[in-house]
Every structure is written in structure tokens, then in C-alpha cells.
Length: 490
Image 1 (tube, rainbow, N blue to C red):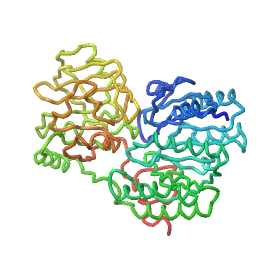
Image 2 (cartoon, helix red, strand yellow):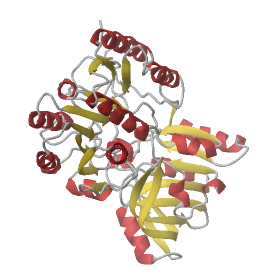
Image 3 (cartoon, rainbow, N blue to C red):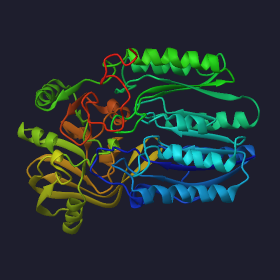
Image 4 (spheres, rainbow, N blue to C red):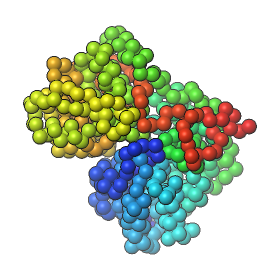
């Protein structure tokens, strides 16, 4: 048995002013064939899983390139095509193969390509023919197109948001692929269009209960796998929206029925699944109240829309400025993307005092820069944080403290959202001693920070993320979906 595996992934915010080129992939994560670390990235877990299982079970694995770019705006056409063709040429050299297993995201958009994953999968299928198994793992914040469904024999998405199960679901996809190759199962894919877009955190009800039920259904009554595709509202593509996928063991009627049943249940959650989100000024009152009543530190505040994981710059200053204006002087900030400020901090050195302009550089939505006297607390050539078993780069990084305060700001050059508290401790910041931790993340921070937080608040400040799909000026997404249409099934 011979299996080819590779990964090409990013999440594209088509409204973001931050472009994506090939160097964006090379700076975030790029592993040539055979050089993928034993620990996975968010979208490449099939590669180290297949490597490990191939050694243990005696089948051959041919590894192609694995790469990931931090979410941003449109991918340059030549960047996508060069990475796609690199992987396809590796597949050509590996032929003949019994299966192709890919790690994808599902929300890529490139210049000239509304559906790059569909384009890649079509080309893979054309090379291997109809009888070779083609499987993939996806992020649930993706666009499930009919083109992909036709090209794939089986696939699954992470179930959790935050995506704490990306490695578990990679193992799930690999296991289904191996069982298929051994003739134990015959996967058939069913999907259901929920005609909606919303936010579905699994860290709270009602989504928590639905995901738990989905997990219990898998492996019963010939149901092999279930995935809940949340969709990605910042991607202006024709098939943007929420869907349900059921993979059955050669039982399409049962798969279709279950997909429709779960899809109706997901649709019924519309408008009530998201975490409570406070507007900026009322949010400041809520933060002050949370700090006052907290029996321990810290209170965690999510700058929910200035989240690099959603493709924005992550250099917004609105929320930090508002906290400072309210007199808060014990804050840990993770992070502000500001390569210029990082360069100045490195040039000045640890312990240096200087006047620094921070953030507010990418667009007018970022807010005005903050000018402050700072003391450089730490500088590193390659900062990092954890996300489960994955290691996420911060690039060249620094920590600066606003003079006369306990406000420590983590400055980074490789845009990334905040995942785990070690983003602070790796740089010498005592997060447990802060009144407030200000993090730029929608919900992926929750699993790491909930155990140490006195309280968690989500606050909406201006950014380049489209937060209201009812009024977002989509040009390509023209299907009737909720909340643009109250009853899209009418």
C-alpha cells in the first residue's frame, strides 16, 4: 500500500487589506517533502499521523510539501499556482499510489480562483483516476463546494471551536482512509446546505450539546463520520455558508436523512449560538465591573474582531486605548502586529527606554497609533506559542512596558492570533499577576485561557473583518441565506 500526502492551507478574508504571497507561506510554515516535524500544524496533521502509522503498520508513505500561511487577504495567483504545481509534480513522481490524503483548510481564495481547494482536488483526481482513494481533512470555517464533494471519496472537518481536536480529526480521516483501502468500508458522502452563516462556538451551549451528540452518532448505524461546516463569513465566494456532511458506509439514503436532520437542528440555532459580544464603550464598563468583582486575576478580554486568525492585520489599538483611558494600568496584551516597533525594540535592546509608536499602521480601521514612553522588557529572534501539540511562530518579537505602568505589550512580526497563555510566559511576562489580559482571538484562546481566567469578555472594536453578514457587501455570495433573508427556505 502506497499513500501520498501533502498540505496546502490558509484562510482568506476577501475583505482584508493584507495580501498573501508565497513568502507568507514560507514565513509561517513551509516544510519540503520529508521535513514536516513530528508535531502537526493546524491543517497538516495527516502527514505526521500517516508517517507514524506507516512505520507501525508496514505501508509506504510518500510525503509532499506542507505549507500554511497566516490568514489574510487574497492569495497572489502565481503564489497559489506555484505551490499547487509543486505538490502536483510531487504526486506525479510518486505514482502509482493507492490513495492521496491531504491536509487542507477550505477557505482559500486566490486571484482568479474562488475555489482553490476544488481546483487542486480536480487536478489530483485527473491524475490518479476514479479508482484511487482521495481524502482530506478540513477546518469547519470553510466553504464546502460541490466541486470538492465530487472530487473526494471521504473527508472530515474538526468538530471543536476552538479547534482543539485538529489532530484527533486527522487521525479520524487517516483511519477511515486505511479502512477503505483494506476493503472494510465503502464511504459515501452526503451533504446538506443549511442556507445560513453564523458563529458556532463549542465552548458553550447550544453548540456544545450538538457536537457531543454528533460524536455519539459516529460509528453507529453505518454512520462513519459527521462534520458541521460552520462557514467563513469573511469569504466572498458563491458557496459561502453552513453545511452538514455525513459519511456513511454505503448507505446514501441514511446519510442524506441524517444530514438533513442535523442541518435543520443547526439552522434552528441561528442567532443564539454565538458568545455574548459587547460593543466597545459598554464593554469598558463590563470590564471594570469584572475586574472589581473578580476574586482572583486575570480577567481575559477578547478583541474579537481584530483577530489575525480571521485574516485581519491585528494591529488595532481601539480596545487598548479605551482600557488605558479608563485608568487600567495592569494589562498584558497579546498581541500587536508591528514589525517596525519590533525592529526599534531590537535595535534599542533589553532595558532601553524610548518613545515608541505602536499599532494603527495597516488601515484607518486599525485606529490611531499609540505613542508612549516604553521600556524594552524582552527581545527574541523567533518567538512562539503553543496550540495543543502544535508550535506557532510569532516571528521576531519583543515585549515593551509602558513607562510607569504594568502594561506589557507583546509585539510580533509574524501575524497570529492568541492561543495559549505561554505566549506571555515564553517572553517572560507574568500573566497571572495582571488585572487584564487583552487577547486578539475570536475563540481559539478559550481552551487555553479559561482555566486561568477570573472572567472572559468578548468586545467588538472596529476592524477590517465583516461582522454582520446581513449587511456585508458581498458581490459573489448571492445565494439566499440567513440573516440576509429571514426564511431562505421559503
